[in-house]
Image: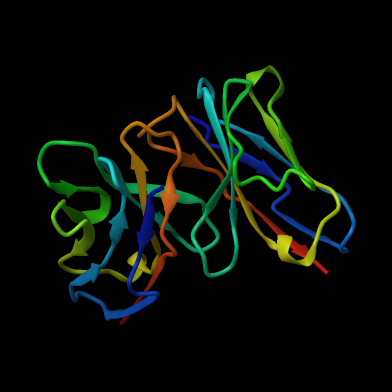
Length: 114
Length: 113
């Protein structure tokens, strides 16, 4: 069974530029998550989708971050414009459903904003 | 809202020695608890989880954890570590009626030969 795929693996941009990350979850997983992991901290949930609907986006900085999951499969997370403090690893995860389900994580995208 | 505290940011340990990683949580309702491991340059993977039943939970790679409701703790243990256990370990909690998984800050384990 293929795992969660993410691209790119690494990205370096200048502040005020825009960037997009892509995630393809495990086949059949209805729930998809985007986390931000700042160096030295645990992952923080940015947004959670159930199929193509948003379950929780309370910690997503909506003035600069956006995410979509068209057709309820793969997803993109966009930052526009980027700030220095957005430097982090962006993790995508998926699970069969919501609640106390095991989440399966991708390898992450490491973003450096200069 | 729930929160998780991992009391040790780094734990150095010699190969074949035991290790315990401490995790305490805060919540006003019932919770489910998880331990995830992150090996260098890899994504997180589940070690074990407590949903209900026996408070002693066994996971992969010889790890186990004990849920203590009165102390609001979920400490992770392994009786004898290997070099390959060098990784970062994250405790996480989700409220019983909730959807959001909250992670602790992580404990970096460095196993020395």
